[in-house]
Length: 158
Image 1 (spheres, rainbow, N blue to C red):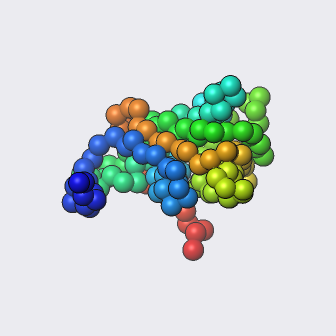
Image 2: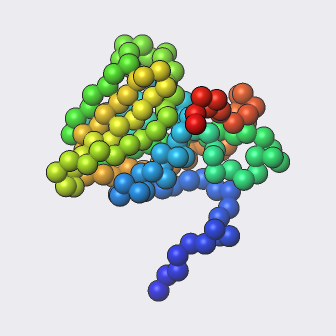
Image 3: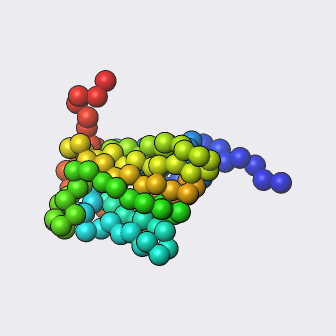
């Protein structure tokens, strides 16, 4: 018999999380808020029905920020069961375009399918029509000092 994880069990370690339910996706959405990535780091493998993004995410979960400063880490965000992709505000031909991820949202359709919407800064969005919700987030590098030296801010947020 296994026990639920306790808050005290948490430690600074690479993330490796999965989401099969909308509530799980909300956790991943919080962790990837303000992640940045070049448009060239998005890949859709149609034959595998997989969309992946290599992003530089801010380590919101880092409780040692006062000790060592703000950090980012490269992470792979993978969506499985992808049937169709649409986007707006993303110049597909501009491989140097830097995108900033704000949120991941789930819009259910006929169960178990639906749409995952990646909302980007600057009115951009990527919509993934999926057969079923299956998302993973995995840190793939060691943390590094955030170039800005501070946590991202949202002064207009209420």
